[in-house]
Image (tube, rainbow, N blue to C red; front, side, top):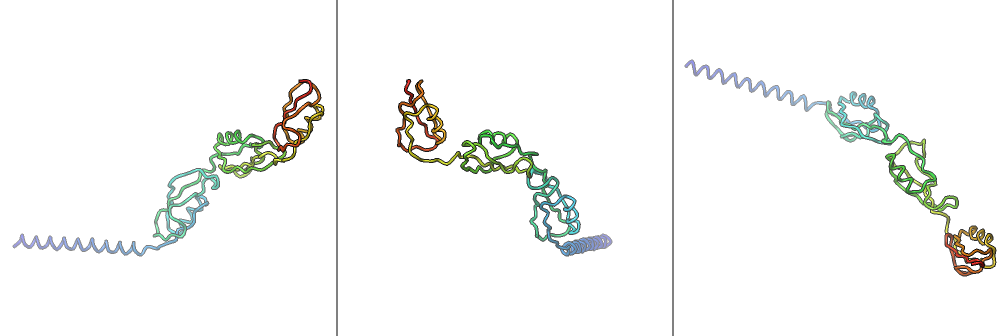
Length: 231
């Protein structure tokens, strides 16, 4: 009988223990389920000090997930967050963020006046990329020369650069003049004025013949071959 009584007592104690555990589990669940729900604030572009204050007021925690270069966000400020602005979360939730290390480059070199190929090479060596090339006609800059850049040295740093590049002057189409009978210097001056390239053969001073013939359609940049009388 005594053994039966002990077994009964043990069963009662066990049952009581289980009931107590279930009771506290229920209370804990209720407390957690009634935790305050808050909105996730917008942290983008803010400093770590500002972010910490914002999250503390909301009962949220800050967790720095990593760092990355960003030319638009100052060093020590937030680039992005794991939960979007306006999300509803329970208090004590950790919000993970990525922090800016600032721009990868510290200055933008000047490439104005350089050829497009050289400008791209210089920028690449400085950790920059040519994002866009805008071509415009120019009478003062030869073809494929950089006329302007954005950003210029001293302006806000960005890792992508836009270049304005010369396409050379507009092509003018006209009839080839008659160089025959002109002295060498006059012919050269006229060809230069018209934007024609001149190739001269012979040792005399007067133009004997030419190619193309007078009256033939030519355009800026075309070559004219002149033969002097003394050839």
